[in-house]
Length: 398
Image 1 (tube, helix red, strand yellow):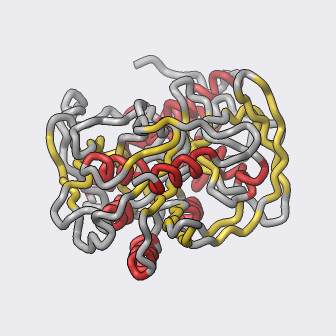
Image 2 (cartoon, rainbow, N blue to C red):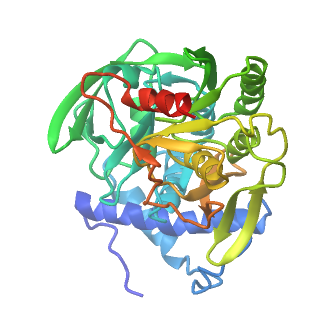
């Protein structure tokens, strides 16, 4: 193995390349160490059996010493270790596999449960590694400002997002309530700037009411920890008011907890009916079935969806549709057909890792495909809620 002259002054591009090498290799070592210590456990899926049982770590210290001797800037051990762990997750090239520091984990869980300071958007990446908006939360500053699903975020406060990770983008968008953030958006090949004021956002995940004509309306913002209990209350409210039909609004709902989606489906489905199936390759890992309740079974139901309906929203819409408990109206859903698991690490951080793909009861995989509604209704340019009107018309004609 050739030696590196530590007196050689490296260019910035060479330093970046070295840092990336350290990120990947040492990150692998860190995760491997935690697996050996029992802090991380998993079932081998056979997809990575081509990897060696052990990696050669001999170059790690050499690269680290080069960085330590040549980098023109201040580094801390915590900064380097966090960079290694972030980099290992990013090396999967999976936008949903993410390492969270302890602070980032809290921010993620706060956002999942609709309690956070920010603008209220769920981010992901497209095939070109551009950061895009999966969905703005209904009623959030982002939604009020006019941000839409599939908007490409080209810059945050003037800083280009090219090469920026999802974690970095999320951290830059979050911030103290009352402060402003400017997002440069690419939409339909046009560049638009949106300035949004951050807010402390704490909202219940489920809202419900009775519309004219005695039609029940239930809106789920995200599938959070409070969703199951609130859905149970909403279902009982609908039954006690003898509604003639129900509209379940999942538009711009970016997803959330699988257990919350199962609980929601269980208000319609009979106990034991399949909600969805998790598979890793050809191996079935788990089948989720309705757990009981089904007090809304038999009540005509429309599920409203759009391009911001993702993940747990698609699980719910797909299950209710496939069991003939709901009619879908709106536009094609986002198409997120993979499942993540949160795994605690010994440093107090957390790894959100894609563990499987999920399949609808009819056997369909919706990853990057989405679900096309029974009735495609585009939103009106004048702000009229054509989709809601279409749902009311459908139920009034039942």
